[in-house]
Image (cartoon, rainbow, N blue to C red; front, side, top):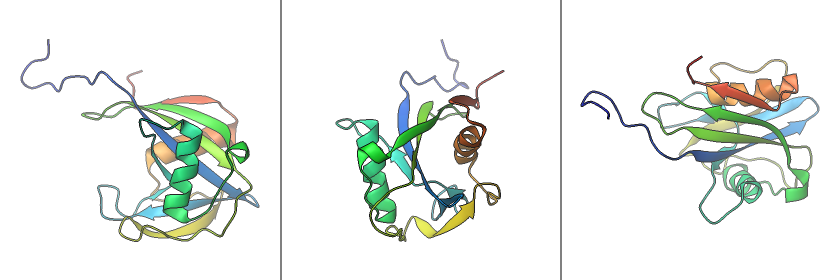
Length: 152
């Protein structure tokens, strides 16, 4: 049983959908605003909601955050990360790549995002959220799975 000083371990895992919009060796990243990660770069992403599948969630997050529409068939799973951090609920991050979409990316959430920028996959910016880095590096190495934050 946990002592008064220990946080109880959650009994569920969250699922996040991340999308790598890929164009000519570049990936679209957004710069967070107004939270603990303010100023850090990350991928368009979000939690999968109770009544949706992860592919639908990925497409929804893209539309909400950067205003582009992607067909589910144009999203391919490129990496999965199992992530934890102290006092956080563990989560699975499913990273999807897309090379085809409708529309041009724009910042649709200025209260949550400083802006969007394309970066060469070989020159990722700093500061980059470690969860995002894990998915991008896994994709670049062609590795299907990684762990982040778990004891060795």
